Length: 335
Image (cartoon, rainbow, N blue to C red):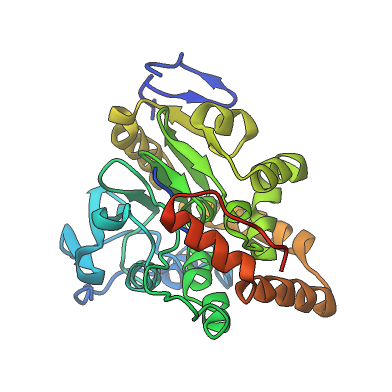
């Protein structure tokens, strides 16, 4: 399939056409009819066993409704093309901040799509209202509760949503129509490919808030853009534009905001149309190799988790969030 000549890619492609508030970030389908599964097809081909890791249908047959809503309407699910399912974050009052219902709904939706008969060969994750996500929502955290809630914040469902995206067997694509900040950026990074609007800003502001980010999250950035760019992104804490993100390899494509939907669907259709066993198998190989490189001794992992947890109980985090809410420079104390 030929993609529309409306985007630019890191490796070339068509010429570029056209050229926030950030929150604190980390950051039921109906029954389907019987259908041929991988084991049946393998037997028909004379194969003794299908690949053990593939739990993904070859011949999609889906009777699911074309549109549905989860998390009280804050996560929209639709099927814009054959084999393509789109999850749209829609939390306009909070600039698409990721609250617990949205994160739980992402996990639920991906579990349903990973079941036999779902017909999902590619999943798009995007945002409504001109932006992807302002990050993890902490509006319910009250003054004086940071230390008491540190454990809950460390173990919140954001990790589960990230892992559900990373482990989903079919290709995934993050379509970023606008600003993508903190936890929103890590959520996008958990997808296989990323497409950003030219006008989008991307950033990781933990340093502006007094937060130590998770070592698993930072590892994802190192895998994508290397240690040098990861240091720049986290230690400066400033935002970068889509062009810079494209140069760094943080996104794979960039296009004008008005073309994000069209280009994302073209990319998704192409991935959905490729050989399913190849797509699932190649993704599995890539994931396994990255996981092997990122393994840490238990003692070191425990140390990094404790370091992160200590930041939640720090005065600097309380000050960083308070200063952000009051729109003033923070007064750091280093404690």
